[in-house]
Image 1 (tube, one colour):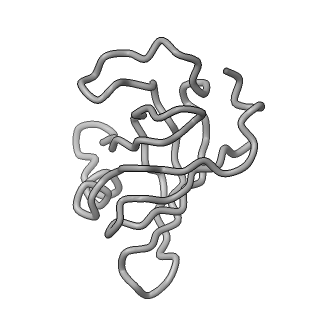
Image 2: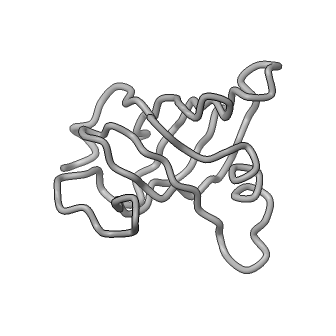
Length: 109
């Protein structure tokens, strides 16, 4: 599925903890850390996410604006997905809550 066909926001149904998100942003001593998100794009699937920036959305300490790059879609145990998914390495903007581990993902041009 081409990323250009994925307009609008798509729900994130599970994702990283605040600790995992912190490590992805700050602990890059040997490689770029990636976190995993599960989103309905267009069906429920897990993705690697390369985190490039995180900004506090409000003063709650749990709501974040995240920019990054989606990696390859995988099933929960690392098995590649065969159904159509967004193009690997698509740039994304995410609004995410680390308390509920839910949010939305939107594809950037």
